[in-house]
Length: 384
Image 1 (cartoon, rainbow, N blue to C red):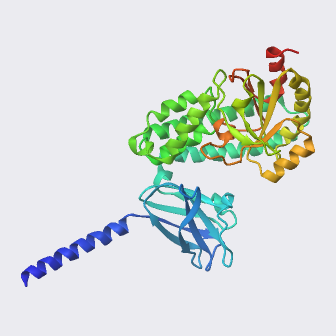
Image 2: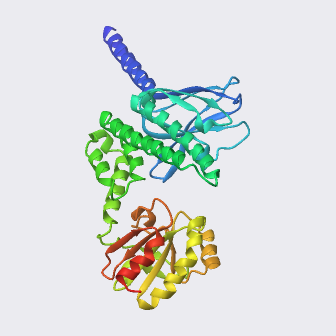
Image 3: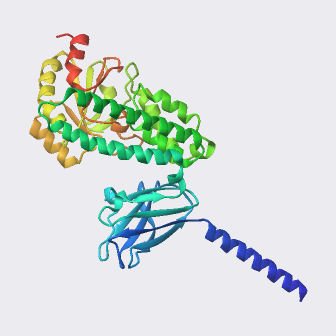
């Protein structure tokens, strides 16, 4: 009998430990949303690499007073919270309406905001208690305020030179402080997934001139941080920056032209090639197209080819713009999915459009920058 009691007690203790562990390994996100009420729901979504998209993991009902509590499994990643009014369905593609919450390990997070402006709700707890993050939040508010001020300055037909100079000084000072704070956050929390997330964000505005500083920070990441998808993406982007600087061999790619022909960059070896990254929705790109057509007509007989590469563009919009602007060169869309090949706009680290590359007959990049200067480059290398 005593034997059975001992075994029963042991099983009971094991079960208690199991259920206790299960309960502990939960993140709790609670809060109050003014204007939300009974029948509304909060959905939590996270990125699923296997599906290459955000997928809902958990949800919770909103009480009549706008309060909610949602529990989710242990995560070390960016999640999205969606507020869905009663009777509506979740549109997970509407990410601009979501509140971003980074969950680091286990913890309790508090959200406070309004239903009208839910995506701008305040978040506390976890990484949001880091002193560096609090500084970043303050800097972000100051930067947004200065953006509003810049709109007012632009309204003046005769801008105050001194006021503009002071604005630029403060603007540069804010961004310098922002970069210093991000660096401090990464160094002080180098083993956190959040540190890798911040570093990855820095890569999206990096250039050949600034990438070395980011590589130095990458070298300070701890083992846990290095295993995250954010660190891997950052590493890939840094490698792409280094492989597309002036003096490097232009990465090859293969895409389908608007006429349906297979086009690869390497097939044009022996010719001078301009890669023109643009988009149908980009007004400066469209305004520049007539100028580029003139350059093409002048230099194509001299052995210069142009590949127009649509970036972040819908297929139907891209094709319509090519027809409207009468673009006579090879036209491809980087949105085309090619097995074993990354998006060409990502490979060439296109942060903005229009962006031009000039590649010589040996496949070496000799210019990267705005297309306004491409004709001068052609005059230097090919002749007038």
